[in-house]
Amino acid sequence: MRLNTFTVPTKIEAFFIEIGELYLFAGRFFKEAFSRPFEFRELLRQCYNMGNRSLLLVSVTGFILGLVFTLQSRPTLLDLGVESWVPSMVSISIVREIGPVIIALICAGRISSGIGAELGSMRVTEQIDAMEVSGTNPFKYLVVTRILATTLMVPLLIIFGDAVALLGSAIIENLKSDMSFLLYFNKVFNALEYADIFPATIKSFFFGFAIGLVGTFKGYYCKNGTVGVGEASNTAVVYTSMLVFIIDFIAVFVTDIFSSMT
Amino acid sequence: MEKTKNIKPVLKIRDLRKSFGTHHVLNGFDLDLYEGESLVVMGKSGSGKTVMIKCIVRLMQPDSGSIEIMGKDITKLDHEEMDQLRTRIGFLFQGSALYDSMTVRENLEFPLRIHKEKYVQKDSLVLDALDSVGLTSAIDLMPNELSGGMKRRIALARAIIMHPKIIIYDEPTTGLDPITAKEIVELMKEIQIKYGSSSLIITHDVDCARVISNRMILLIDGINYVEGTFKELISSKDKKIQAFFK
Image (cartoon, rainbow over all chains, first blue to last red; front, side, top):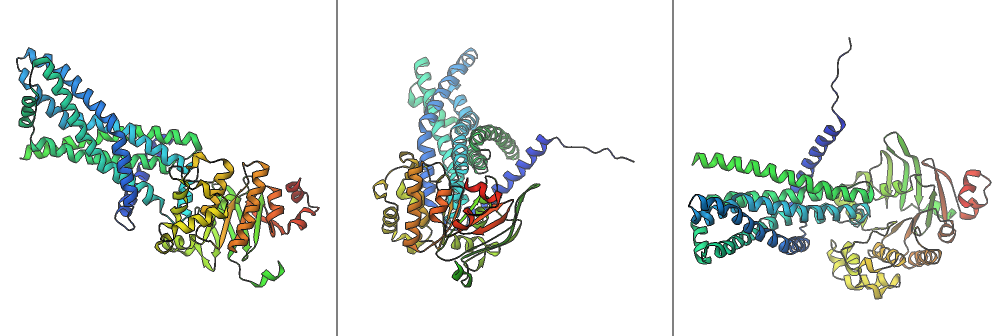
């Protein structure tokens, strides 16, 4: 008797193999991150590169985000006669959800693809092999430092982006309704609670970790020469963006459970 | 090279085998590299030369066989022991493999950073290595400001900065014009004399092999097809051997 066998399509199989490899890669990161020697200088350099070089992009994005969000929501609140709710509604939306997700997506495009391309080109030009041959652990020097840098810097960029977005919102509100900056930010800080800021900050660390992890993973195992470098950079952005949404969903779900308990 | 037969080799490879799927690249390759000698391994593209040297520095894991470097079987060493041993091996990559984001000085300092006793004398070691390749003036340049020949020289300076016992060259003259290639080969000879190191050179440049080799191995079908001096090999009547020297 011949048994019918189920064959897993190659693409699905490759996807799950990649997930497994990413899991092992993350495991190696935790193992190497807590063992000596620590690459502090390279970590600081990466923090500076990622933070400083993303500042302008995050500022512009955050400012426009606050501006547009306020302009779009004002008419509806005006119709309902609750125009004074604009600062509280905009600040809660930006700090809890829109700010972290949008800035994380911007960082995915700017940082994750950059890491993927940089490590990918280092792989294909044998620079990573050269490090290994010289007795240096390239995983620790290149991967651990970059993942730590994104985990530390992305939350800071998100906080900064949120602040700039609120500034953009305050400017529009000032122009449209003559609300002073002092009154606007007074309303913002009255509206924001610890429960709005804390979960958003925690999830932004996870966003940062995902951005660094995927970027380094795609770059470190880059294959197929220069074509592979492009692929590494491209897939790093796609995978990171997906992960940002998945992490966001989990974070909201967990926050909801905790808030219903208290 | 007869006298070397009684000396223990600094690098000894026995029955090295490596396959990629069904494609057998190395089928029992043997090699002995003695102190102070220049051994050239020639073979066609895809004959397994690069795989063999990557196995020596453990960038690749062989399927079977043994590799002994200065009496230590590298297949049995842990990561730390291997890293220690790697400091006694210089490696010149085919494409130079200079770190793009670092200056020449930083490229040369990089192998020293994990060795505190050498790191304190980094300035003198960097200058000495750059002096050996005649490029002290390039110390603060970035790799993208260097020509192909300069990159190869800097890569050579980085390979010798730890004063290695063995220097492995992967196609040292590939991609260079004939004049620069000749200069690089001369430089390799000078460095070998200055540092008293042993050289393992992978190439298909006959001129390079003629100038630098004490001994040669032809790698065909994953095994050492023939071994001898350049003169012995070039005068061989074997068609497979002659094909390399046409």
